[in-house]
Amino acid sequence: MAITHGQPTRDAFALQVLTDLDAEAGVAQCILVTGGTGGTEVATMDLSKPSFVQASEVLTLDITPIPTDSAATGNAAAVDAVDFVDSLGVVVFTSNDVSGTDFTLSKNPIANGDTVELTSCTYTASV
Image (tube, rainbow, N blue to C red):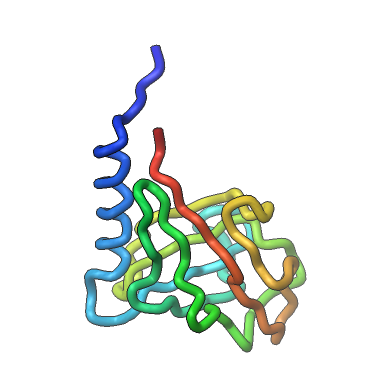
């Protein structure tokens, strides 16, 4: 038996994710890691506020300006997970799909001292 969600529920879920990211006084962040979720942080980028633009169940990253870390602490290993946290550091969502489908990075792997940009990102609430 498969479980699915109706469109209004998916829309509400996406809105809640956006609300959770942007609710605090500061800005949300995107944290790039190696070694999977909870692994070694290699870059941290502040997001705009609001961080995403919602269209139904899809959130699209606001890239004005493009989120950038100009002094990454990379170790030349490929980024394999992304954490999106609110301004208090609470994880709102995580993904290990950094293949370019949902997230586009200016470079991967990232070496120490590199500048890295998150040039696009979409989040789609689950069916």
